[in-house]
Image (tube, rainbow, N blue to C red; front, side, top):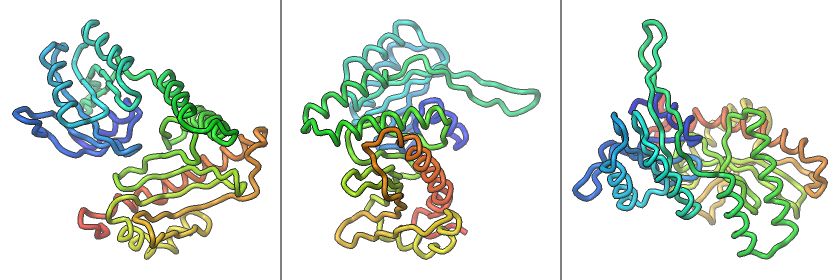
Length: 297
């Protein structure tokens, strides 16, 4: 799949995608496309069908999903029957919150003599709201029902809605009762976080390097520290974290009374602007590293 089409598909799904493999072997079969979600790093299986949906492709989708242990499965077809759409809706209801099924119908749009471009219409998707409520309820049951956890969940839920209303370019994961919220930044092994710290009365944003080459990437970015901080508009905290595998580059706002909910709009505006700025400053640089971790000039 061409990169532009992969982006259009990701926009339709609400997931930032990176291509892993085409015609991926699964036992004696071959899955059409295998991608990775850059929002939270799981595999995304994509099964294409150029005609109306049928039982054969439904069986293939489920077989490949089981064989690859993918948690997000996407079935694309020219037309969905009501029966097959109902199957995906049912799977989204009965499977765990980490498993997602999408159904998309494909159209080709052409304006005058332009090259035809795909348009993906969602016909089935997870019920994010009900899943979010169930997941949050279970997490609150599994953890002490502290005031801090309840505040975190309320803040991130409100912040996710705020980003959607503002049509922000950054897309969050589902809100959870924890001190961070995760955002993709265009490449596996890298993520962004929004941060809450009620003990130190501060909020923050960061880029985290999470794979085995985190220290190498951190060093390469640190070589560009002057230009990075100039583009961001402020000095950043460069946290190599020698005792850990990860490394982080962060920016904080102090003196934040997070229990004063009337100030949340101020904090959320600050966080949105800094996350968007981090994305703009780091995304191109991160994707400028080649497979051998050398900067592409």
